[in-house]
Image (cartoon, rainbow, N blue to C red; front, top):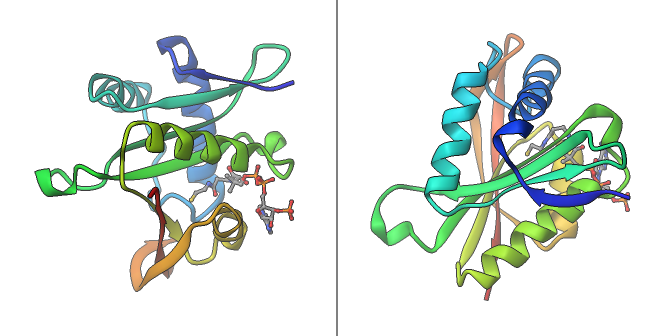
Length: 165
Ligand SMILES: CC(C)(COP(=O)(O)OP(=O)(O)OC[C@H]1O[C@@H](n2cnc3c(N)ncnc32)[C@H](O)[C@@H]1OP(=O)(O)O)[C@@H](O)C(=O)NCCC(=O)NCCS
């Protein structure tokens, strides 16, 4: 049984490990260098202070095996109804519905908060994530060719949008 919970400071080392594993092994995050605990702590504090969710998934043994969050899409006031989200799982937790369940929980929270739209920025090679999002009702609304670079090649960025009604 996996439970979803609001992240606390104690979850941050696990979130850092998940983030840095994705940085090291995939094009899902357009960054080469690992993040530091200080940087992830600042990110978590900004989300918390802004009233935005950082959900963690905890396994039976208490291990933090994934997280999902949303925050401002753009700082200008007219964008306040739109948020940008992220979802990351530990390698051993992938492929059994957990990513879908975390993003579904974010969508529910966003709708409850009266938000209007959620946007995900997904690497064009990340077909697993694109498919997962499309199954949840996200629609591809933009594809920016060669705006990112990692592992010696240019990468296309896909914008996926879910309107919350
Ligand atoms: C992307 C990620 C969040 C997906 O979560 P997940 O729990 O593995 O995905 P789910 O089990 O919920 O998959 C739901 C659907 O998405 C699709 N999907 C997910 N991963 C896939 C993959 N690697 N290849 C093909 N399809 C995939 C499938 O259609 C699946 O439905 P199905 O089980 O009926 O076939 C997770 O694999 C992950 O954290 N990956 C590394 C980091 C990352 O890429 N994050 C997203 C950045 S945008």
